[in-house]
Image 1 (cartoon, helix red, strand yellow):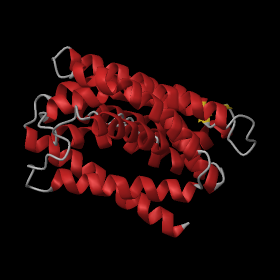
Image 2 (image 1 turned 180 degrees about the vertical axis):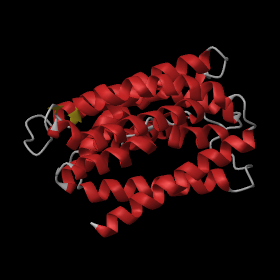
Image 3 (image 1 turned 30 degrees about the vertical axis):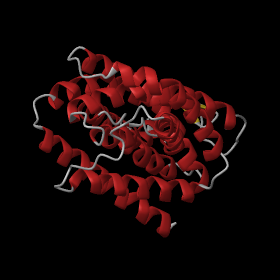
Length: 274
């Protein structure tokens, strides 16, 4: 009983984070990682995991949770014809490769570097979404050879490195390619599976045998957090996808940008306070 009371606040945090992340995944196509990573990093720190390892565990577990979330979210958007299958076919293989390379790079970095990278990238993306002028079209001609390789490889690499489903970067880039925000969100949800599955498996391998990890961990993936949060995120993602189609494009952009801004500030401060 004493052990249950000790763990109850942490289990409650997992459920809340899973619900919020799942809702954002369905509504914004972000995979939920922008919520999972900071929440899991805090959770692992509270149970005594070393700060350098807690960020790796947070990133890896976030990717594992995103696997079922992205499936649920992308299917919900596909039913509403909001997934650009042409881009998925064009970019999919390169995103998959980038995801694996991103994990290899992340496993060699300190946790503080991952925190800073997470914070800075989400900050710049948030500013792009919050600015009133949305006529930026850097990636409009995505079929050019450089964009066909560099952009999706970067999406897969940075996303797996930071434990996110790819929507954090994919949604702004697709909107800069003249895709509507709803179609960008749906396509980003589909990319989430291509990023999260190979990313999570790679983190299992790279973290195998690390005795600094908490109990019930496979490599850097914690199974307790996965089992508790994944079912909640799947349910919340489906509800979030329905909510996305009730909002106007500008409302969705503002909500997306605000969420990213709050998360980015927290992760940047964490880097300099540890």
